Length: 620
Image 1 (cartoon, rainbow, N blue to C red):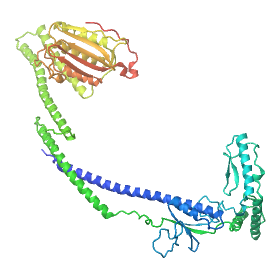
Image 2 (cartoon, helix red, strand yellow; image 1 turned 180 degrees about the vertical axis):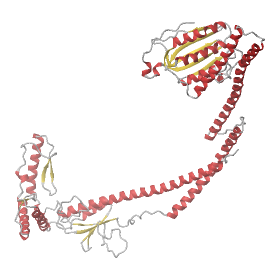
Image 3 (cartoon, rainbow, N blue to C red; image 1 turned 180 degrees about the horizontal axis):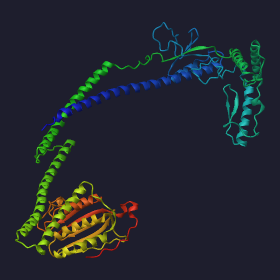
Image 4 (cartoon, one colour; image 1 turned 90 degrees about the vertical axis):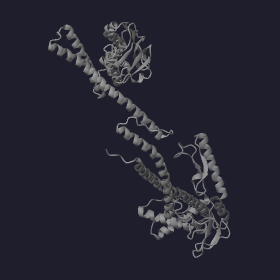
């Protein structure tokens, strides 16, 4: 017989391969997670830097749009540097320093050594040419909306417009219930802001002072119109009239519209150039004295290889130790299993500890003990079957040979005796056939609601004669259930189960004893009990009563021996019905066998159609 290889080598190789794979995956995952996390942090920092640069550019652009020079911008620059933590430097287009956030502010000379500021400007601050990369939502003509120049209102005009705007907002709140507020538009002109698209109804109409241009705005608008028309005249395009919203009339075709737009943008720059600060280069970088830019991430392959080798070495050492500890009990289990394969059913494994291996060893020992018991039962069963078949067959053969030799006359008594022996053989063969069919799953059941009272009465009637012949009283207790007591089962097989229990009880109850049949509902199950006042069963024998051919009374006479299959059939039939059976006994007092079966309520709805009203049980 071929021997399997010891498990140590195979287990060691598998665990080593698994641990190596886990180690490599963990190293790779750690490296990937570290790189991804660091990259995410750097990306977030870069986004913050871009947001700070955009804020700095927007603030400085607003200053340039509202001031003719940069002489007073130093406080604004220093405040922005303090808020963002960045070093800010403004220079002329020739890289001549204007001022910076921290003195001294040297110009970023590309030929010079390391500096905290970038070598190229971040952007150009020019309110007449907005950087769309920094402010994507800038106007189409790239002129900052805050650059109003000659359109800026005087103090008196602004006061008058604010008063008119407050009056209109108050009217909207009081008359129409509109949450109106007074705000300044991008050009600094007071306007009334209302939620939604507009104000319903003609009430609270906008005062003329809010809609019409002021004297300052009219003068500036006239100058701008003249500049635009002069540009259009050079382009041989008819003049236009501009509104305060910088819209022109009359409308033109598409080609002329483009010419007018270009002339309007150029004329606005020509008009505003005296009112805005000159363009400057903006440099934004880390503060002076800070560390340079963060180094780019890179995987040091040599270092990773060293760490991977160290992790693999530790993993291999630990895995080898674990395998050696695991292999010893596994080898013991293997040797015990081979002994059982060779026929030594007494093989056992010593169990120590409370881990999984100890649990496996305990399960193996339990299996070996159970197998030894079953093997003993099998030997006994084979002997019992041979004896059960041989005894009646020997009797039949002997009597037939005696008749053939003329020693005995074939009268009615002999015929009855031979028939009894044949019936005993038939009963044994039928029991074996039922058990074989149940084991193979081929025992068909025809289930329907079965009244427990009727069932017990039928079984008592069928066994009354035999019980009376043995001097045993057979009693059926009334069922105490207002709504009846039913089981959903095969009535023939159910009578067979209860009949086997009654026959067994009568067989082991001495004359003058009593066998009691009763049934009652327990939760969702029907309990059928057969109690006797017989000799009882020892506690050590009780777990074996449902084994095939097992009998507490080892005699094989017809009065008490039986075939040894009745209780085994009861257990198998109960199991295929979805129930179970168990026994309780006190030696010298009697035994109680209980069958638990599903009640009618557990059956499919269609199986309950046409159910009968239960009848009360009677006493036999």
